[in-house]
Length: 145
Image (cartoon, rainbow, N blue to C red; front, side):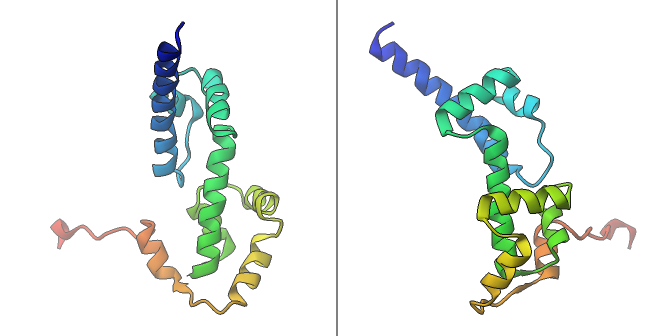
């Protein structure tokens, strides 16, 4: 296989992986099924994990977890929400898993992170605004009124 054909294969693979990565970037807060994400890229689950890690240096699970932790850091800095509310908003179903993963990534617990960041005196966004932005409030049905 020539260099040009090899480049086409790599470009095609990266394009398909980018589709899957875009899905994870858009839907990071919800539960994501690895089989569904892999199928979007046209791969089996196991081949997708290998290709993703080769291209991006981390597995899809590690990537998604890191993105969720980054979003949690933003919320801990700026939102007036409990750690449990933030855990759920960023897509973790277990507070224990969230706190463990957060500490693995940042070196501190979510509570310690919040205290450290709040010491910098940044104004907090009221929790009701964050919940509204995240779709936490149901809209009334105007047709019934």
